[in-house]
Length: 237
Image (cartoon, rainbow, N blue to C red; front, side):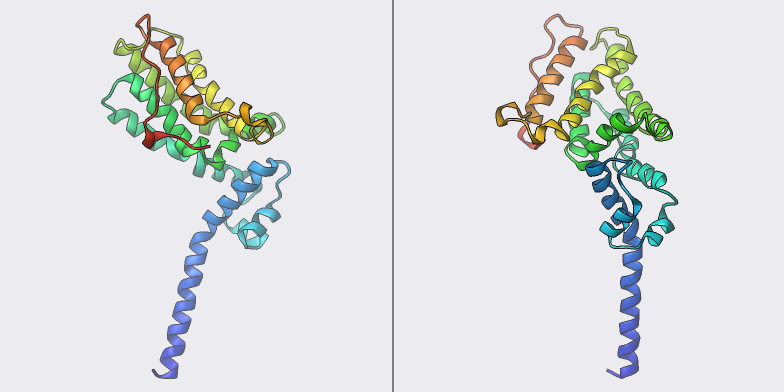
């Protein structure tokens, strides 16, 4: 191969690697930011640390995200609120009972958020929203409001179809959210240091919570049988 052609191919290959690296950087920065925000909290995380963990300079980070606040917002959109559009479509297409829909709701949350590092974000917001009210307002608008609206749609569907009894939807939504938030808080706090017999097994916990919710929401006096998860749906701690 002529030397000039070999040199051209080497330069082309190097350029392609640089392009691929540049395209990957936002994802690498978001992954590093998620790790550090969950580990250290919002206030204690410095953008220099995020850049270093992602293997880039602080200046490179600011090419993609104008501030730590914008970086945090991007993390929330990537790992939490980005799921809402898909879940909304799934609710629209769902053909089973509202009991099954609520079952799928809890287990989809666990699969995509609860069992991932993103479950540390709710704990972070519970602890730091008061000190960063602008982030609290963002989280309310970006996560809490649309997430609550999805749950309200499931409950209203059940009421309309005669599967759930009439209820105050606002507090019905809170009843669904409360056990999920507790599990997220526990996973990122006491679970790491409690005695083995006190640890929570997420699959059993979610099944028990779903059973209690459905017994409370259902129109029948006995409610549905204890909700169980199939082997393919078993969450892992």
